[in-house]
Image 1 (cartoon, rainbow, N blue to C red):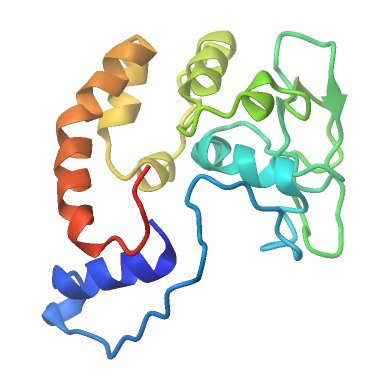
Image 2: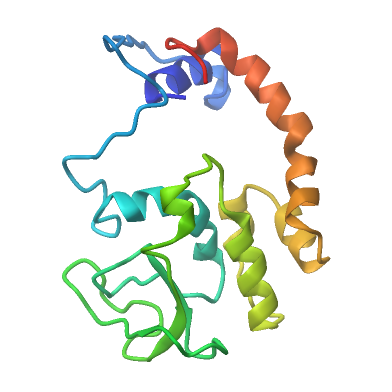
Length: 197
């Protein structure tokens, strides 16, 4: 959904505190195509410096609640994943203090991990969160402390963490979302301004 569509939904469904509604005017864009690719002219955040980081962000955002570094303090935040104890050593980076990242996770320590800047996910973007990385790194790290207290916040509930710890397959996890997704799709239809996918 666009921001305008979602704002209409929040208002229409009474999701604001005390069921309040805001005065809202949404001005539709001419010729907007939901499927079109768009390169942002400005960075939405210092830690999202380019289109690569933006495409990877929905999946990598979940790693905010893990022991993994997302490359803050490097020239390629949200394009790499790493940890000082990652068992494979073919890619590394060392987080430093920058003008927008003071004291990044694993500051001045060598982190080993994955360089996602040439990921297949980018060239064949499936339009869904990449859970495979989360499952892969959880398995490879083999640590009980892989998830921190923020993971459930980023995931939206405790279920995903429980599913991963229980060893559920990606397909099984995605299937558990189906009923909720179908319900959401039906609800969102009345707020869409532009042609659906």
